[in-house]
Length: 370
Image (cartoon, rainbow, N blue to C red; front, side):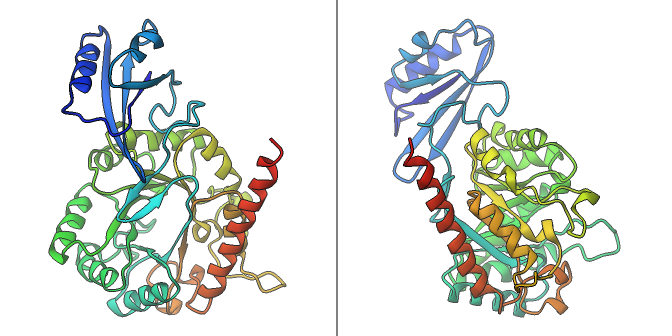
């Protein structure tokens, strides 16, 4: 059972205190409180767990701080839609809004290599009006002998350069709980010049202790990539691990499924699941065409395969694109062959804007027929 409190409920107010006192007296029922900061107001939701079938919605709705009550299903208790279109979706972070209606491009380095390339990448993004990027400091690799990322050593200059060019959010994968502390330390050392979205890679989608650690901290939002060898349902439940620990500021990322059926692409592109995730949950949905396609090949008309894949996701309603770029792909330590170049960036951004406009026009076709 889900309780949605009146907007901007004051937790020091009598109504809130009386509501919690009543909930604490319910036998066999526990509760968790989650705050959601929207564009204009703060909402508080309370999740009742345990033997809630005996409770009536009328009884709980009568509590002084409660606006309305929703019966929820077992799965995706926090992140699910639960057939309630009035629930707030998304979150605000460092001046950037993420929800199922927003759209952002996170173009950047799959793996940070040196300050020169980081600055060139970020500078060109700023010149083209972008406020987000991706920068990999920690890189889990299949082979123990390949480059694993510069780790905490590159964080200060990445953050400082992001601040210099007014980049608001950096998507950055972490592979261990200690990396959160390292990011915190570097952010404090550099004066908090930017923001970080903690990325959980496909290999760690079911690393439940890492998910819990990221969920316990509320400073940074999370970007969870779908596991490449598990079902969509299993991956959505991984996102629920984050939310159940207290951090519901989660973006879900589709990045292709590992199967030979996807050949010659690196993975089988799964972007038809964009509207499915948006229907089942309240999470903004991201697509990662770089790791789906994994090459820099073009069709006979000159359009890159990776751009075609990105377009499929955006025209299906994706709210975010995570894509590899590099100023000098031959110098890249990781995934250089699939990285787009600075010359590709203007056309790519124009294409994504066109695809986004097309999605909105498609949406209008069906909404006008209601």
